[in-house]
Length: 376
Ligand code: SF4
Ligand code: SF4
Image 1 (cartoon, rainbow, N blue to C red):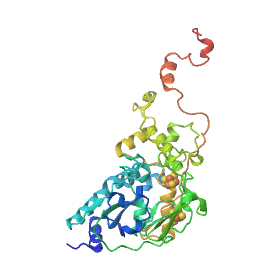
Image 2 (image 1 turned 30 degrees about the vertical axis):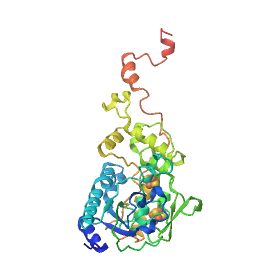
Image 3 (image 1 turned 180 degrees about the horizontal axis):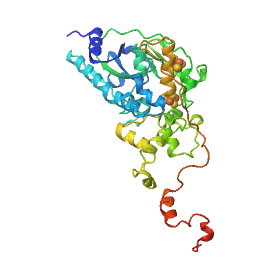
Image 4 (image 1 turned 90 degrees about the vertical axis):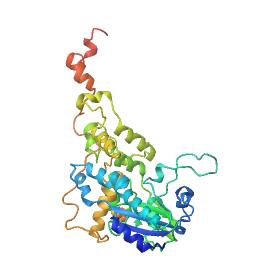
């Protein structure tokens, strides 16, 4: 049975997919083995990349500084792990109804995978994951922004991507000319609270690959700083950290922490419990909100993409470089920002066990305890 690009695009639209692009497999010929779609489907002839939008309103609570759940739930975890994969799955089944094999791509990133050693030397590891954004570039679905965030003509950076590899030979879309959407305005650089996105003019911090004969470049984002900020260890954007660690004057924006180190710090902190935390709210969490949202959603996005999505989208809306625009501008007032520095005197509980237990029961024990103690 004949299956065409037009048929797949119509089905995608009917399913509720917002963006779709189709690329021919030869465009990815230069991709390294660990990031090459042919590594896990050697017979693939076409790469289909689909996108579903992030609702602009899901950033509103973070922008107000009052509500973080919506973004993590709707626009990160559920969009990446449920809403969009469900449509990826349905589109893959549609393709297979026509007798062509369709490989729906698992929503993972190459940075977290392919870290395992192969079973035997000279073979490929068993957890290869390609870069979905580079697949999207080759499929003509959008382009790489300077921020490393994928930008589409319809929604700019407000998009989450999925991918299907198929052995059906389909008419490809043209690759979008680099610079069509990202005009190197630098808003993402200026508004990134993690100081993670390099200046647009810094040629030393530029990464370039070749896809389908076109040079594709973006800024070499400092992933350690971004991960610290995105996952709640930057107190300029996390009221949760600021509240529970009022004396922590750690400056994520000038840290040279690596991405792996940042993950090893942020996730255990978010999931961790500490016996002395029981005194306050009986949850035992080190940072109550992080534990709650991570346990509920399987994710926690604290920065809210302040520079790489929110500021970028505002810039693209204002310069009319994207189609999905709104009756009112995104920013209504000056944004908020917390400080790295401790404000005022040392705050918080030094040792809740002592303050709530020992010091209450034996009020004299802390003040000058060494002098007064008869046990010294
Ligand atoms: S804000 Fe967006 S359009 Fe401007 S340089 Fe950054 S990625 Fe490009
Ligand atoms: S998620 Fe936050 S810290 Fe990371 S690049 Fe985007 S704006 Fe910067």
